[in-house]
Image (cartoon, rainbow, N blue to C red; front, side):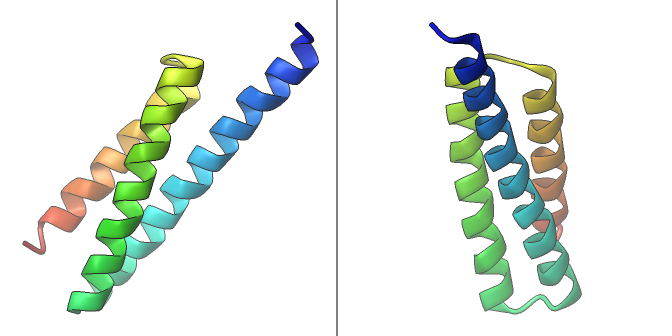
Length: 85
């Protein structure tokens, strides 16, 4: 197996997860600033996608440091959003 390809795939998985968590951070920020039903639903949708991304990253790459850090950021965003409920 080509190690360059494995490294690229690993970087790609982590980059997608990072983008997903960044999207959650933005959506949660919008929901906290302007707590409409739509903004809260958008944040919840982003969280759902990010949770799937975390799960896939953990399954494919294992519990690497960048993944666990992003998972913790996601968890913190979920807690912030829960303050609206």
